[in-house]
Length: 364
Image (cartoon, rainbow, N blue to C red; front, side):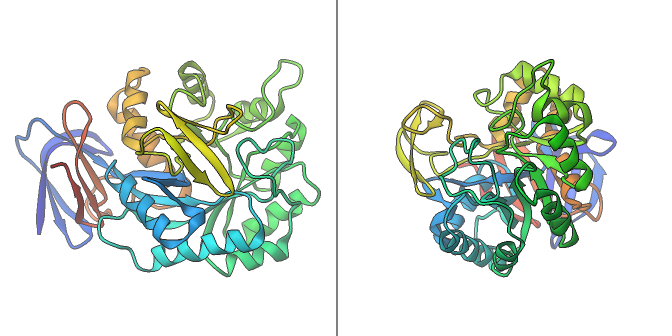
């Protein structure tokens, strides 16, 4: 049985105490004097393409590299994301992700499934997605689902057959998200009515808000319950992040991290594209943002710097994504919950990370 002491974030607020871990669960929380450390629910990232040089499109070893890297920054559960690509390339990525899911390795965050970002997106809002978009195709989707557990898919609701496709996905337990789209507000609302659940990297790669043409962003701010947002300060201005938090009750943070995360400046892969890390951003050759170099611990620090208190910031990187996915025993610290935990020092630097009760990272 392991024990962790500190200022612990519980559903009822902060408690100074000691956590007892038994197997993969939190067995008990006992009040005790414990200063100097914060104990938070493990971070949950629902949109990760890679990290530490590993691009998930490259297969199993790259996916494992990403899972180890992000675990060292406090991520305990994650969805690994594909990019738009030919069918064979996507299947190769799915097979690699499935292998990591089936047999987690030492030091890895748990991979809970796939975020299929495309190929069912708009050719007019590819962003940094390679140029292989397709209209919705249930038969192709069935083939993809035969290779890995696809939990989330990004798609454009204005494409032919999209509304029927959303209903098809919901019937198979996949969460459709609206993104990489030029939809009008009316087309977006139709997607929500059909069963789309969230918005992929809100504000980015979607039709923006104009007071007479509210677009996808306007529809999201008016009607969405859920949306993901990249909190690196580059993809979305911090003021816009705060505005979205006021409008969308369950806005949660993702990294959209790519292979360049955690690496020095230079060139890296994102599917069939070469991307370039410069300072703390990642770009295509023409300057288009191409995913991020963000980690979830840095996202947490950013939210605190932008005015959220630590408990509210932790909710955005842990509790809310768990609720979105229906993972009732994750994103909280309470008796019987999964022992996915992050221990941070007073400067919010990661000291230790636990996944299912096992320590997967310790600073130094």
